[in-house]
Length: 112
Image (tube, rainbow, N blue to C red; front, side, top):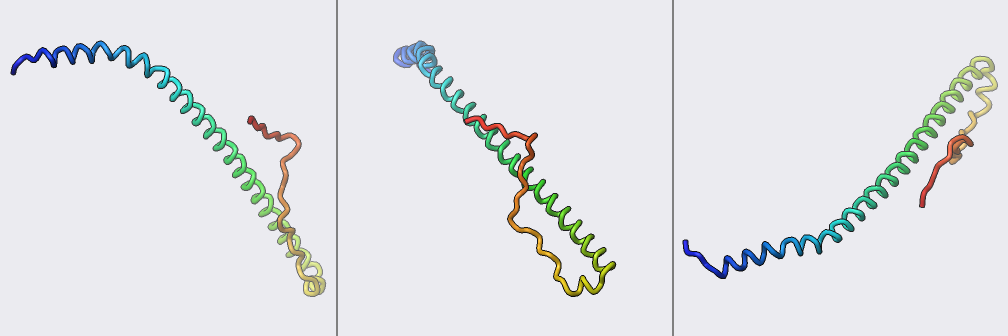
């Protein structure tokens, strides 16, 4: 293997340029990291809001199921006590589209 002075000089030049290049790219790396952290925080916030919405839907569904079960129990008891009344009247339709709202004690914080 022969020694090439041109290759040696190019190697030294590349080695001396590395600190200059790293100093130039450091601010870009810091900015990219800051943007990435901001995106990650925003995704966490969105995920937390969606989990809260899902919990609200589950709570509304649970209340709705309990209301239907209670209405079914009352309907069964009412027919046993008054069989002629149950045959004449159709069972009341449950209200559709009524959403359960948050209580006064539960406040959702929204940071713009």
